[in-house]
Structure formats: structure tokens, C-alpha cells
Picture 1 (cartoon, rainbow, N blue to C red):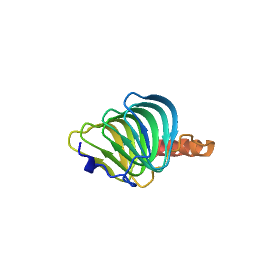
Picture 2 (cartoon, one colour; picture 1 turned 135 degrees about the horizontal axis):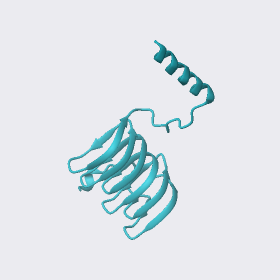
Picture 3 (spheres, rainbow, N blue to C red; picture 1 turned 120 degrees about the horizontal axis):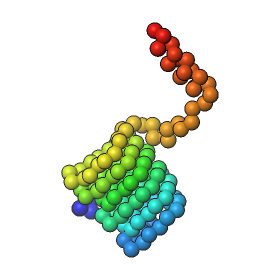
Picture 4 (cartoon, rainbow, N blue to C red; picture 1 turned 90 degrees about the vertical axis):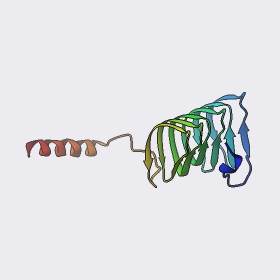
Length: 142
């Protein structure tokens, strides 16, 4: 991987997990952050996250931009873009307005390229369920 392929807003990393680091929990940050170790949990930031070649992340990720050269398992919601570089691997779901997958990347994910990166609605209200049931019955009777 060429360093010039990675474009970080400030031109430098403001936070870093080294390859011998294992952390579990919730990560929030501003600036640019790089993970070369192992992280499990939740990541929430509007900034740039870089998953280095040695990085292994299992997480729900809500981010501005993510650049992946390592491995990510989980759901990614990026407000701006997702880049998967050669050697990078993503298993899960990606929702972003811009998806860049370079030669040599491994992608085992459902991908949604949309400007709406908000989490999907998980609960159906009683009114919605009733309307859904009524619509189904009407369609069956037609």
C-alpha cells in the first residue's frame, strides 16, 4: 500500500492503537485515528478512521470517512465515503454515499450507496403493523 493513496484531512494521525494493542469498548474521537491492533465494540465519530494492514475491528461503526487496509467485521455507516484498499477485508453491511474498492480488496458485504446514512428503523409501531396487515389482506383479496 502506498501512503499517498490515503488522504487524511489534517495530514496526520491524532490517535493510534498499535498492532500489539487489544481494546474492547466504545471509541469516540475527533481528528484522524488509526487502528493497527484489535478493537471490538462501537466506534462513533464524524472524522477519519484508518484501519491499518494489521488492524482487526469487530464493531458497529458510524464515521465520516473510513479507509480500510486491514479487516472489519460489522456494520459501517459512513457520512462521506468508505475506501477499501488492496489487502483490506470487510464482512457485514456498508451504507455510504461513496464506496471505493481497490484491486485486491475482499468485500463480503451488503452495500448501500445512499446519502441517507442514518440507522434503519428497527421497531414497527402498532399503527404501521395494523396498516401492513390491512394492506396484505387487501392484496390477498384482490
